[in-house]
Each structure stands twice: as C-alpha cells, then as structure tokens.
Length: 107
View 1 (cartoon, rainbow, N blue to C red):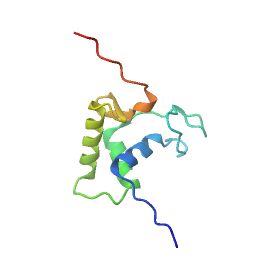
View 2 (view 1 turned 90 degrees about the vertical axis):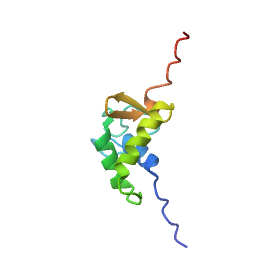
View 3 (view 1 turned 45 degrees about the horizontal axis):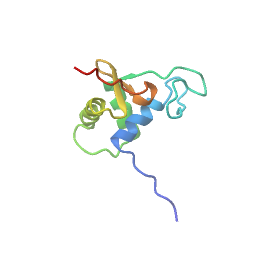
View 4 (view 1 turned 30 degrees about the horizontal axis):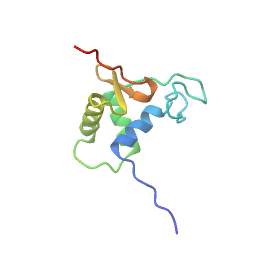
C-alpha cells in the first residue's frame, strides 16, 4: 500500500524555507548557521520572499491570502518567543540560529 505524503503546514513550510541554502538548495540541519554542502551562510529573509517561497512548497494552504496568514504567523511567533525572530524590519530568521532571548532587566 503506498504511503501518502504528509502535507506541510504554513509554519513547517516557513521553517523549511529558512533552512534551505539559497546557493545550492541543500537543506541545512537544525541550528546550523552555514550550509554543509557549499559553506554559504544561511541568512534571514524578507517577509515577502519568505512567504512566497513557503506557498510554493506547500500548495495545499487554504484561504484567499496565505501570504498574509504566514506573515502574521511570523509576527506572533516573534513576540511570544516562538521559533522565529525578527532581525530587521520585515526580515525574519530562525530563533535557533540566534540563541536564547535575553531576559529583561528588572525595573
């Protein structure tokens, strides 16, 4: 009996895109800052580019505006200490590459 492929969620697609090397298209291991194949640095991506690539690899996403939904996922995940971190306005990366978030100083 053939095994059906599991569909990617929007969050899983975003993580996969951020782990993929732009130079050689190899998927890096968790927490890696450089591609194991070509040695290129894995860099943060702009929200528009990131969401467009994620929609391309996860075509089963429902809704009229999946890009807007994923952009909201990035923003909420950043605020809650989730798996994404905003590195610059409109630019996100995986939190695993940036270490733990610093605790706020007591007032």
